[in-house]
Length: 187
Image: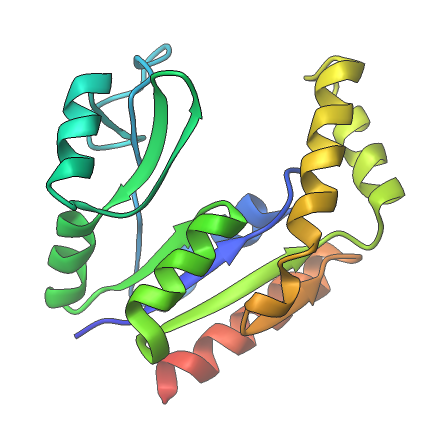
């Protein structure tokens, strides 16, 4: 039976880069695919990037208690983690790695307890986070400020995670994440 590794972080902290690095290591990891009620974008495929559900299908899954965690980001725009695909991956012996927001991460950790390791990737500072988000060149100043406000909220959750990695040097953060995950999987 596999184990679960949960990564949460403010946008721009390097979480996805660290997860992608871990997926290239020999850790028997399967990536948790989230469900969403938004339509596919570009070449996105159901069951690859996301499980695409209509808002009504998403609500029906909520009523049937089929989610580990979910959030209605705005009206009829849901994101969540379905239980069944995770259970199938775990039963096949895979270790499942999650890329979720802090509330989702806390909920998944509570659900699985000691079978899950929760890791929070923290930027060195809010100013550095602002620099990274601005440097991406993909967001308007208003979007960046809303991401900063959300990051400040999310930083309040660090004490609810098993481990906090400060990503002030990507290679160092990746090495630290790899060692923490290896130690957890060896238990």
